[in-house]
Image (cartoon, rainbow, N blue to C red; front, side, top):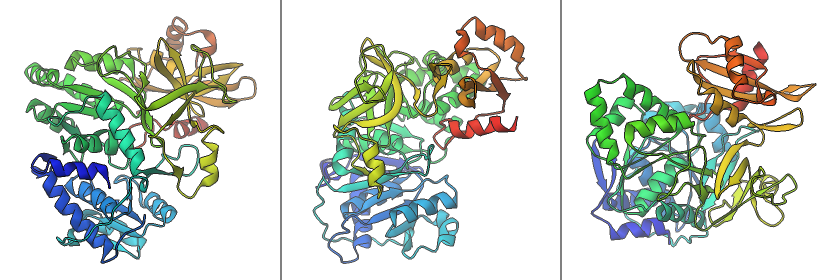
Amino acid sequence: MIELIERSKHTLNRKAIVANDKTYSFQDLLEASESVAAFLLNRNADLKEARIAFLVKPSFEYVALQWGIWRAGGIAVPLCTKHPLPSIKYVLDDTQADFLICTGEYQQFLSPLKHSNFHLYENIASKKTELPDVEMSRRAMILYTSGTTGNPKGVVTTHNNIKSQITDLTTSWQWQAEDQILNVLPLHHVHGIVNMLCCALWSGACCQFLPAFNEDEVFDIFSKGQVNLFMAVPTIYYKLINRYNELPKTKQEEISKALNNFRFMVSGSAALPVSTLEQWLSISGHTLLERYGMTEMGMAISNPYEGERRPGHIGQPLPGVTVRLADEEDNVVEEGTQGEIQVKGANVFSEYWQKPEETQKTFTKDGWFKTGDIALLNDGYYRILGRNSVDIIKSGGYKISALEIEEVLRKHPDLKDVGVVGLPDPEWGEKIAACLVPSKDEVDIHVLKEWMKERLPGYKLPRTFIQQEDLPRNVLGKVTKNELKKLFTVI
């Protein structure tokens, strides 16, 4: 029994999805997903964990496909709508996908792949069928990592894993059936799929899709009072703030009044600059709730829904999740000492697809998932220092947080953004390098260095600088540090 879908049978007439100016009920979802399941089964009793890849924009059709795959006993493999064809082919080859399904707008894009079982969603006829009994222990979904340290890996989650990820959040964030959330994120990532879509539908609430992000459209939906929850990545909040500042005062007041009525708002998937948090607070009256998670485990740590949301911190472990900080030998470190975040819980993934050695390496001998993220614990709140491989710079015997330096530099009035990395250096091990994104004109490096000396100790001062119009980012707006490092090789 797939519990997420079974729960919808108690809310048949409630509004479930709003997309493309249409409203769909849970009854509509059940009927459409049964047709998908019947098409996939094609008179077979059970898909038995066949991998079904699909390329569909955030929409009712996306959810119908996801549910239909699960109801037929398959594994859902959602593809990124912004990825180039070679990236799509990599996922199809790696999963050995049994089906490839897309909506008509992607037919021409995917046709060069010549997949042997390629179908259009629009050709799936309405049909009923006998559905298999799918146990919660079965594999449900494969999502791919960003591949920052090698080829992307397929993260396999079971129905039980997904249920745990959902219930941890619906409990902690007090989801209600009356909630309606605006989802502007891609649906090949846990943030959009679990945190928003699945949590909403589990709660009998509504998820509204905006297939392409547009600041004015988002503000228009806010102003109409159509939604009361919003979750996004820091880049989106940054863009909304910039657009808000360009609007007439009357429009600003209208937006701020509407935002003030929201239940709560969340930021995640990348470090949230404190300056962005403070600006959004002044606009909306809300302190953004920061949380921490990964493709491999959904969310594990969160600032409280009720209580202090501490800027620059990711909060406390969610219920049902156990967290510790450990050193390089997997020994637990004392409070106030930096260590790797390690996690245990029903939320943690089962395996990397067809990669048993990679799976084994990412767990300790006693079963803790090694996240690779370095943090500090102070007064019960965790604070991320960065990714062990890219955000922790080992220079002159020090372990230095690139995120800490970035946060200081973002306070400079002439900088719009900044990315800090460590570059190989024969003397220091690594030297600190900063990529600057000026607000307007080119930044005077000499003046900037003097400014930094008043705010950072000498061993944390960048020694190399470049200036760019923007930082390299992935589809979720997260800065890709390995791509950033390459920019320094041309100077």
